[in-house]
Amino acid sequence: MKKALLVFVVLVFSYSVKSQNIARNTFQFELGGAAGLYSINYERLLLDSVNFNIGLSVGITYFPHLFNYDRIYGAPFRITFLKQIGRETYFEFGAFYTYMNASNYVAHESRRGMGDTIYAPLPPTTYSWETDIYRLYGFRGGYRHHPVGKGVFWSILIQATISKENNLDSSWEIMTPWVSFSLGYSF
Image (cartoon, rainbow, N blue to C red; front, side, top):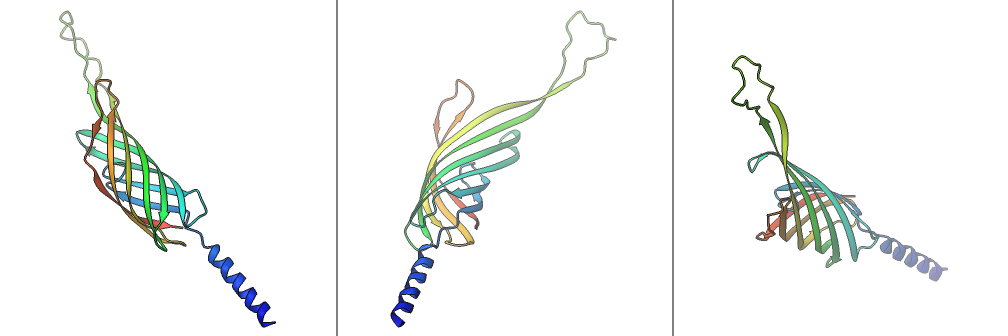
């Protein structure tokens, strides 16, 4: 009877240890990441494994009145590979793509020709958004603390970014690598 009870306890314990899975959903605030200055992201880990995992992430960013633009908004998309190096610590490596829309609200005044009379009413001024599209691509790698259950998530990563403006005459530019920091909650 004692052996059967011991076998039962060992089986229950091994099942409970094996069933501990990594928290698969994360909301995070990222400084200096895929979107440049900051972004708010949601990440979903695809595998139900603590040792190795793959995550997909989507985010948003918005900047009013930055870099001579009236508004800039964007959406970073990331794929992340996690390799466990400790109980709740991981090596993270991944790639990202960020779509950025930079716009100015511009007034277009109507101009009159030489033959117009002085007393004719002026046509109204029209306004429109002038937009530049930027695409950011890059790779990143670093350290991640990711809880097995619910809890605080954080990471420190180094990334390199390549940017492309939508104009035909623009060229690819390799930017200097920088550090990104993420803080969030995993559940």
